[in-house]
Amino acid sequence: MKLIPLFKVTDMRAAVQHYTEVLDFVMTCPEDTLDSAVVDLGHDEMELQLTTHESGRLFGSVVNILVTDVDALFYKYKGRGLDTLSRPESPVHTSPTDQTWGRREFYVTDADGNTLRFAQVIR
Image: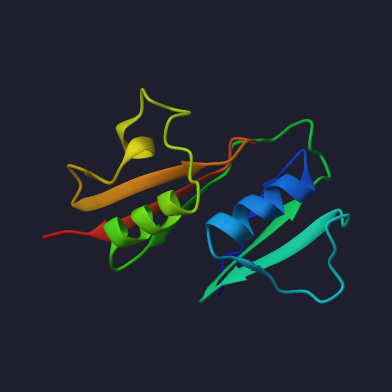
């Protein structure tokens, strides 16, 4: 079984730019273009889809992604322009944070309210 989240976006070009230029995803379907209503993206063993269908509703999907070095990944993305000032009230949006449930996490929320939660198990 495989989970492939579907994120609704209002601006496909901006969304693809965010996921490919900042977060290392690549477009995986040769037929997809920046004008497609659905775009398939991949990164290592992860996959997700972006769609402009139903873009006026159902926003706010969340995906948890387990990684081995959450701090290195955060600084890599920050160096590429990850905006950590858009949610100053949320510590996990501004830097990796140790959580009480045994994970070190940071969150990236795109302009359409979809959140990737990058997490590393800590002991």
